[in-house]
Length: 282
Ligand code: PAF
Image 1 (cartoon, rainbow, N blue to C red):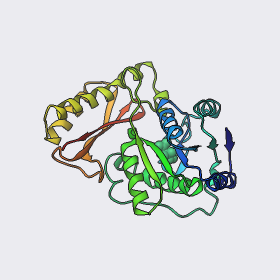
Image 2: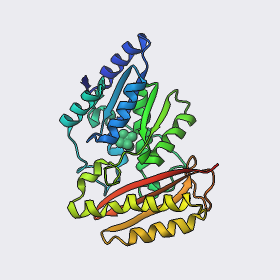
Image 3: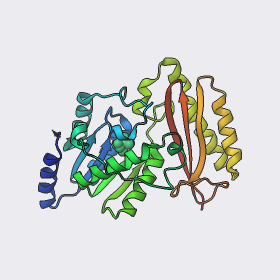
């Protein structure tokens, strides 16, 4: 496995692989990798001839009061994990390699970015779309792998690829959870012991919503209210949002029909965590 830091090195490597007719899989990450990322890389390893993972904490997707500076980083551990899975190349650029002094072009999106995380993190998806577009242009993968835990991000990337005619297959992969149900996230590391216990309110609330939907409840407001009430029962938790949206358009829906995304964001102390489930009604 090689760790490449420059765009030119990645391009040269990819050119060589493409000349040999190899299928390239790509897993974009911000590092501090966990089993969720591992599942994406393992899937890419199975489905592609070569696998590239990027590790880049993208400043453009963090708001001013967010955790850019404290975002956890551990390149040694990340490299070991990637190597054990059989990743061929890690792309680990400096910020200056991705954004030079004169940088002023962005990929912005209307619609899908207005609800859920887009409401409380207004510049987040512009940063995500811009960096993912840049990474796609650098790596030119055949397939790219994203986790369903960031379900809005997955929908946004699918839309961007469609709208901008990018010839890349986007593969969505299931949420990976701890044994007690907490969805894996690099941000779980911010939680102290008490907060870690309190964070179980997210997966419990998701299960509550899922049970209501599966037992036939179709009134979105009823489900949202019950889920909010459940979060309020945990003293360390503060709801950012509980919403039910169409899975593809990320528009709010009053009734459970078609494919819906039930998504929550909850502050546990200062740490903001997200979780969700997808329900497909025929
Ligand atoms: O999901 C993430 O880790 C990031 O948003 C991504 C897709 C790597 C872009 O920085």
